[in-house]
Picture 1 (cartoon, each protein chain N blue to C red):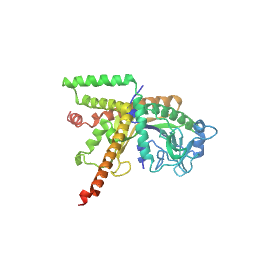
Picture 2: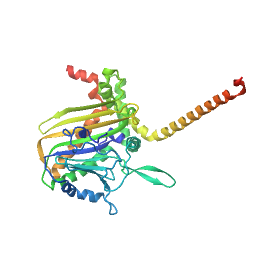
Picture 3: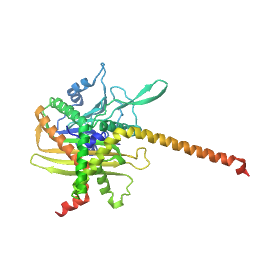
Picture 4: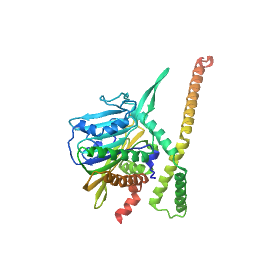
Length: 146
Length: 261
């Protein structure tokens, strides 16, 4: 079971309370003061979807100043790379800046791309179904029976 | 304002204090925290779930409907955030999931959790004056392997070398010292988990980064000391998480240079 804190995996070392199994997301103990249903088994998947959505909301709300700062830093590091003066540490930093910008881009266009991907999958499924149907018709046709 | 990669992956924070031992009955702890419970109520109803009331461990924990989890026992006090979900009945259709907690960037949640912990510490301190021996800040992230920060990717790659990266699932846990100075010792407890392939959520990794500060002499709790302990700790933890996400710590070239120097 997931835990909220690494400390809960090792109560002696951590700062968390002495608890063997903190509640999972959306789970409610039997002693709950008011009733929210439990979602054992579903919580992790739903959490992942909601986390991605929440991450996108957060990343999409990144200020223009931060994006500008990231773009400037990327340019500065790229200049150093083309000058062949980029240190290993700076190279790692460049990767991190690129990743940060990719996250912001995903937040701004990710939902639309996910929808597009979904449509593409539906079309692919439709294509597969049509091919299967065509095969069945061909097998049933008088020419193939002969 | 501090920004972090944790903001972009909807990580959630927990902050904990390790206190000197004092036994208080659970009802006394809940009574001390009653201002928190009152503040969470709405329309004459308490809006929280009591998730732990364990007499043998002398531990109590509850989560408000907006996602803040409070936990206390004889030596620890923690406040964390977790997303809260519920089903909502819709007319003529299956129920839908609804998020009760508000998604906020990790850094904003960390500020909120720190404020709440500071207030809770003062409430617990009213039972009996206490001292702080340790402070921990956790970042918990659920993320697809494709989306992990480059530094964590480096860590996973570094640890997968003996098996030529053919590692299907893993749970890596590291407890390491970071910095040792006159006043405190900093350490990290990092756990990276990838579930077994074929499980329902096999593409979702769990990153649990726990940064801790152990004080060499314990600090008595007061409004001033809580502030003085929490703010620098937040900055140090975020800085450590940033360094981790950049990945130079796990870069073999840098490690080799450092070892040979």
